[in-house]
Image (cartoon, rainbow, N blue to C red; front, side):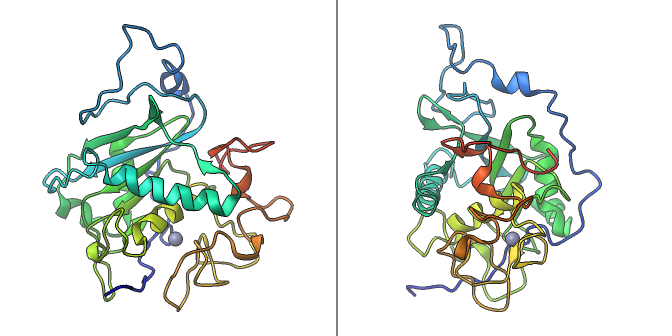
Length: 289
Ligand SMILES: [Zn+2]
């Protein structure tokens, strides 16, 4: 089968915010930022092996950190050390640059290489699945990213609800966008009918950009085509589409009128996000940060 239609299996923010959604004070910024440019002989190096530590950062700005996350009993498919996460991110960030005229999301790198972290959670796949619509929250609770980083979590566990989830500030402020690689939501296909960084049409690639855009606040309720907490109704080719048709993403904000590069005063525009590289003029934080 050359084309597997994308059923929109992203849960995103369609449920109520959880009471334990972290509220970030930014108090730990200093810990995040040190050791970037001033690397010395005593500083930790860019460890090529799997590590739970944050390798020294090349940049000091707001950035996305990739993570491979497993439930306590999850099968290790080595997506971090075998390069599939890095390849997948390269594919979708290149797509994003084509759509934006050269802007990418800034990633945490060490000596120019993507810094992919690893975390094995304390709970089992079944325990985390039992949270229903709150798998993302379970991941965020244990990773607890703070300060200037958003985490792009490639979670090698299941969900009975969706294939991914994101925060949606200001209503749900959070630092984790996640894909549930072995999700089994209602619908004709399990999430792993698709594979990472494979030429199957790029489901997981578009899905991760979709969840990160939610986590940056898109689409805001003031977007003319907004519906269902962070989505747009305009066209199934739109990255943030939700609706009755198969999702066939290929366009970032069709007609530039909802969440990227629009001209609606006071409405969130991801084109101004501090997470973009190069940094836009007058760059702004996600709402509620
Ligand atoms: Zn969504």
